[in-house]
Length: 260
Image (cartoon, rainbow, N blue to C red):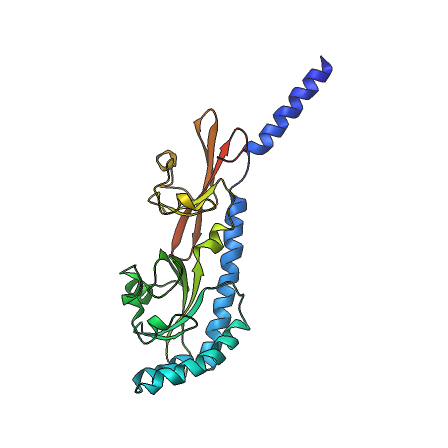
């Protein structure tokens, strides 16, 4: 009888550990990821200010057909400078002036000398970027013409200096970089219930099936709620807030921790 009680206690403790899985762990991954992105963006912006890239590169747009040739020659040097102070995780580096015209892209020739607002799927992107009051502005997921990636995140920072032309430094991140942070039973949603990121990409860009069970209206970033869907499934969820974004992080727990 004594051995049976010990066995039952061991099973209960093991199950309890699985039930209390905290989505804050996943939020911490996101915070760490974006802290590093913002550090890289600061470094990128500092170089752009020191070298006055926006003014320098902007001149090429007003030259004849030779302007693009000079731009392509200079682009290699600029890219080496930027890559020396950032992680190698970005699918593109972009610079735009304060009217939204692209003066530099590491890899997307299609958008050079074009207005970025006309080259992204989010028609309000440029308006929101120019009018935001955040230190950093995070846009997407969205599509950008000329990019091999289907959908991306753009992390942007306004840059200006005493003698420099103002504009924005932008880091482009493929969705796979964020999807890879998640386990198979973890999902990131927008506040309308659309799945933005998931380890299993077949769920991305679709309405999350259990969103109606989540109470997010008054959910604070430091809070985590648990809701039981049925006897075999519970959801643990919390809010990830940074700059202008609010994402819902959800972890599905089936049969005390097995992935769905």
